[in-house]
Image (cartoon, rainbow, N blue to C red; front, side, top):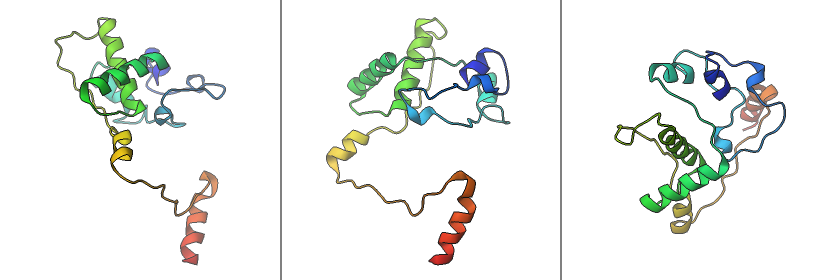
Length: 145
């Protein structure tokens, strides 16, 4: 998405995807087919909001995560840390002002706290399927129950 937006494109091209597996800080933000060029998707939102994309290094995301957790007193997930680090990057680059009104949506927090306060368990999936045979596999599973 970052490459396409910086190049001014409203669609992704093969060169926007890495040639090999990459290590990332937040695998929640990885998607083989991100909603970028479709109507109402990321490109349209960036365009309508005069938005920007950023590349965030792991260390910057970890610093942002620590800052948010210290100030707010609750743990956050990696996507929120990347979002916070992006905002700090925008501030450092002068792309936003310290007095601007900005909404930073940090969802998915409190997982560590939940695990401390509550007994948790892993839920076994009802079925695991491959993309190529998902419909058939689901129908077969339904037929046997």
